[in-house]
Amino acid sequence: MGEEDTKILNVGIIYSRFNKPVVKELLNSCVDQLIFKGVDEKHILQKEVPGALEIPIMINAYAITKKFDVLIGVGAVIRGETYHFEVVSDQSANGLMQVQLKHNIPVINAIITTNSGEEAFARTKIKGKEAADGAIEMAIMMGSV
Image 1 (cartoon, rainbow, N blue to C red):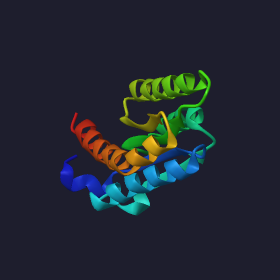
Image 2: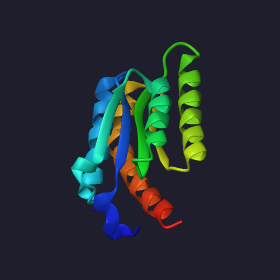
Image 3: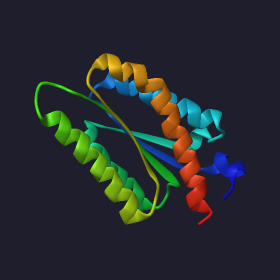
């Protein structure tokens, strides 16, 4: 698979409903960049889950199907007043890592973790684009292995 095959890549995106305004911007930026880089919109499957901790299990379900060249987890974890922030950040990232190693499929972690909503909104557009670019690069790289 080479760069000319970008249009036939099958991309699965699982995104979180929690912190929806931030996630929506992040998701839109990611999808827009995928399309801009040549991925056919019909080859991008999106699914919403309640929160960041639910992203890995749905990513795993998508990986099991063997229908996707790359998977992307999109979410936002914003620091609150409790330790829960660290648990969600660490465990969602760990879950995504486990899926990609278990199934040998690239899983891009676009679950941003920030100290505030302002920090989150400041990162959405660039992080969405970076996730899309990384997804395309890894799908092409893995396709040539």
